[in-house]
Length: 206
Ligand SMILES: *[C@@H]1O[C@H](CO)[C@@H](O)[C@H](O)[C@H]1NC(C)=O
Ligand SMILES: *[C@@H]1O[C@H](CO)[C@@H](O)[C@H](O)[C@H]1NC(C)=O
Ligand SMILES: *[C@@H]1O[C@H](CO)[C@@H](O)[C@H](O)[C@H]1NC(C)=O
Image 1: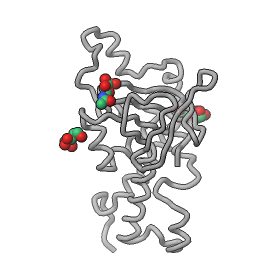
Image 2: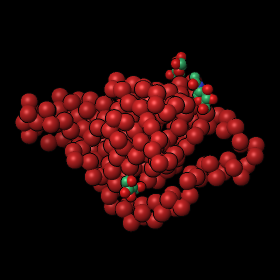
Image 3: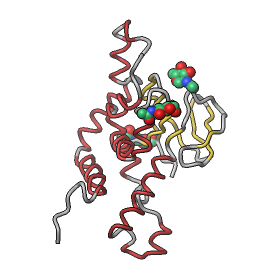
């Protein structure tokens, strides 16, 4: 058997991300308590302490999404999907990223690359071999795309299609933003930069 390299087996990287972040749990919760105390990300703190940085000119989503510790698992996935990372890295394409937090990602009922229909059609080996890996990548891509809105600002009540094509909107109830129709709460806004915003979710949209 050939040794499995990360190049030959991209899913290993994802599995490693999930495993590593699971191990990093105690540290996570320390950082997380800072996030709860302050609505501001370190970058926003930096910008606020630096009047010349007010306009956030030039700072885009791909520069900041990796800096918010409690969405590290999801932001790692956005970098793995070319169509998504290219968009977040493009200053002339706005986006609203709806990032499930790390505990939501760890507690998903099924892994983001799994689809129950695949097990029905292909059995327990659904994600083995080259075609299995392609299937897993396709599912993972769709999972991430269901969490990216190709516009920003995104107004309350406005129905928009995610990159995966399904329609969603948000509404505010008792000062709490909720993504509909899934009724998933937005727990904070991690970043507002020149090509869009990163919202942290207390649930997943897939
Ligand atoms: C960035 O987006 C613009 C507008 O959609 C597009 O014309 C351009 O090709 C994109 N740039 C890259 C590097 O993908
Ligand atoms: C992109 O986002 C910026 C920052 O919120 C905003 O000023 C600009 O109008 C947006 N552009 C489009 C085309 O929505
Ligand atoms: C994620 O959101 C849920 C629901 O709001 C919350 O209970 C949990 O503590 C959050 N976890 C992290 C890592 O922020």
